[in-house]
Length: 126
Image 1 (cartoon, rainbow, N blue to C red):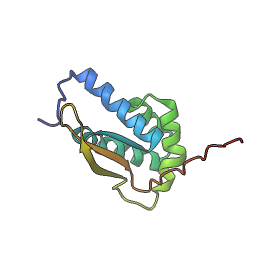
Image 2 (image 1 turned 180 degrees about the vertical axis):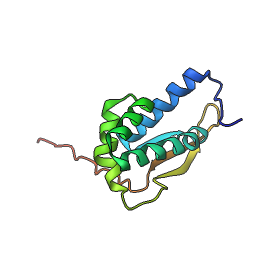
Image 3 (image 1 turned 45 degrees about the horizontal axis):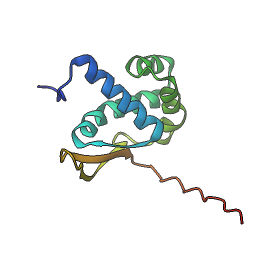
Image 4 (image 1 turned 90 degrees about the horizontal axis):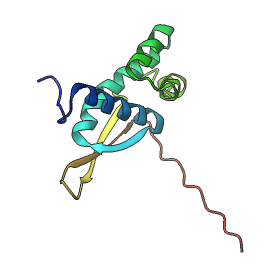
Protein backbone atom coordinates (compact mmCIF):
# COMPACT_ATOMS: atom_id res chain seq x y z
CA UNK A 1 0.00 0.00 0.00
CA UNK A 2 1.66 3.20 -1.17
CA UNK A 3 -0.33 5.68 0.92
CA UNK A 4 -2.87 5.60 3.69
CA UNK A 5 -6.46 5.55 2.49
CA UNK A 6 -7.99 7.52 5.39
CA UNK A 7 -11.23 5.56 4.84
CA UNK A 8 -12.03 7.68 1.77
CA UNK A 9 -12.44 7.06 -1.94
CA UNK A 10 -9.70 8.28 -4.28
CA UNK A 11 -11.59 11.45 -5.22
CA UNK A 12 -12.31 12.33 -1.60
CA UNK A 13 -8.69 11.70 -0.63
CA UNK A 14 -7.43 13.88 -3.47
CA UNK A 15 -9.78 16.70 -2.43
CA UNK A 16 -8.69 16.37 1.20
CA UNK A 17 -5.01 16.61 0.31
CA UNK A 18 -5.60 19.56 -2.02
CA UNK A 19 -7.45 21.50 0.65
CA UNK A 20 -4.85 20.73 3.33
CA UNK A 21 -1.98 21.75 1.06
CA UNK A 22 -3.67 24.98 -0.03
CA UNK A 23 -4.47 25.85 3.61
CA UNK A 24 -0.86 25.15 4.56
CA UNK A 25 0.43 27.41 1.79
CA UNK A 26 -2.01 30.23 2.58
CA UNK A 27 -1.66 30.19 6.38
CA UNK A 28 1.88 28.72 6.52
CA UNK A 29 0.91 26.69 9.61
CA UNK A 30 -1.98 24.30 10.26
CA UNK A 31 -2.95 21.76 12.89
CA UNK A 32 -4.14 18.37 11.66
CA UNK A 33 -3.73 14.73 12.57
CA UNK A 34 -0.23 13.34 12.56
CA UNK A 35 -0.98 10.86 9.77
CA UNK A 36 -2.39 13.57 7.49
CA UNK A 37 0.54 15.88 8.24
CA UNK A 38 3.05 13.16 7.34
CA UNK A 39 1.17 12.41 4.13
CA UNK A 40 0.96 15.98 2.85
CA UNK A 41 4.55 16.88 3.78
CA UNK A 42 6.06 15.26 0.69
CA UNK A 43 3.42 16.66 -1.63
CA UNK A 44 3.88 20.19 -0.29
CA UNK A 45 7.67 19.99 -0.52
CA UNK A 46 7.33 19.03 -4.20
CA UNK A 47 5.11 22.09 -4.70
CA UNK A 48 7.75 24.33 -3.09
CA UNK A 49 10.38 22.82 -5.40
CA UNK A 50 8.15 23.69 -8.37
CA UNK A 51 7.86 27.20 -6.97
CA UNK A 52 11.63 27.48 -6.77
CA UNK A 53 11.92 26.68 -10.47
CA UNK A 54 9.49 29.50 -11.16
CA UNK A 55 8.93 28.99 -14.90
CA UNK A 56 5.61 28.82 -16.71
CA UNK A 57 5.68 25.02 -16.94
CA UNK A 58 6.11 24.78 -13.17
CA UNK A 59 3.17 27.12 -12.60
CA UNK A 60 0.99 24.98 -14.85
CA UNK A 61 2.05 21.81 -13.05
CA UNK A 62 1.27 23.46 -9.72
CA UNK A 63 -2.15 24.59 -10.94
CA UNK A 64 -2.88 21.03 -12.10
CA UNK A 65 -2.24 19.67 -8.62
CA UNK A 66 -3.58 22.64 -6.66
CA UNK A 67 -6.34 24.57 -8.46
CA UNK A 68 -6.38 27.44 -5.97
CA UNK A 69 -4.99 30.53 -7.68
CA UNK A 70 -4.45 32.40 -4.42
CA UNK A 71 -2.37 29.57 -2.96
CA UNK A 72 -0.31 29.08 -6.14
CA UNK A 73 0.33 32.82 -6.42
CA UNK A 74 1.54 32.96 -2.80
CA UNK A 75 3.66 29.85 -3.35
CA UNK A 76 5.50 31.36 -6.30
CA UNK A 77 5.67 34.96 -5.03
CA UNK A 78 6.55 34.67 -1.34
CA UNK A 79 7.18 31.11 -0.13
CA UNK A 80 9.46 29.68 -2.80
CA UNK A 81 11.91 32.63 -2.87
CA UNK A 82 12.54 32.14 0.87
CA UNK A 83 13.93 28.65 0.21
CA UNK A 84 16.20 29.35 -2.77
CA UNK A 85 19.33 28.38 -0.83
CA UNK A 86 17.75 25.29 0.75
CA UNK A 87 17.79 21.85 -0.88
CA UNK A 88 14.72 20.37 0.79
CA UNK A 89 13.28 20.01 4.25
CA UNK A 90 11.00 23.02 3.97
CA UNK A 91 8.44 21.78 6.51
CA UNK A 92 8.48 20.70 10.14
CA UNK A 93 5.96 18.54 11.97
CA UNK A 94 5.55 19.03 15.72
CA UNK A 95 3.33 16.70 17.73
CA UNK A 96 0.99 18.72 19.93
CA UNK A 97 -1.74 16.80 21.73
CA UNK A 98 -4.38 14.09 21.48
CA UNK A 99 -7.88 14.99 20.36
CA UNK A 100 -10.38 14.59 23.17
CA UNK A 101 -13.09 12.61 21.36
CA UNK A 102 -11.16 9.95 19.47
CA UNK A 103 -7.64 10.27 20.97
CA UNK A 104 -6.13 10.95 17.53
CA UNK A 105 -2.60 12.35 17.67
CA UNK A 106 -2.59 15.94 16.45
CA UNK A 107 0.37 17.77 15.01
CA UNK A 108 1.26 21.20 13.72
CA UNK A 109 2.83 21.27 10.26
CA UNK A 110 4.58 24.52 9.37
CA UNK A 111 7.34 25.94 7.22
CA UNK A 112 10.72 25.86 8.95
CA UNK A 113 11.12 29.65 8.78
CA UNK A 114 7.65 30.33 10.15
CA UNK A 115 7.51 33.22 12.59
CA UNK A 116 4.42 33.70 14.71
CA UNK A 117 2.75 36.98 13.72
CA UNK A 118 2.63 39.54 16.53
CA UNK A 119 -0.70 39.87 18.28
CA UNK A 120 -2.54 43.05 17.49
CA UNK A 121 -3.27 45.09 20.56
CA UNK A 122 -6.89 46.08 21.00
CA UNK A 123 -7.56 49.76 21.32
CA UNK A 124 -9.27 50.78 24.49
CA UNK A 125 -11.12 54.05 24.47
CA UNK A 126 -11.79 55.56 27.87
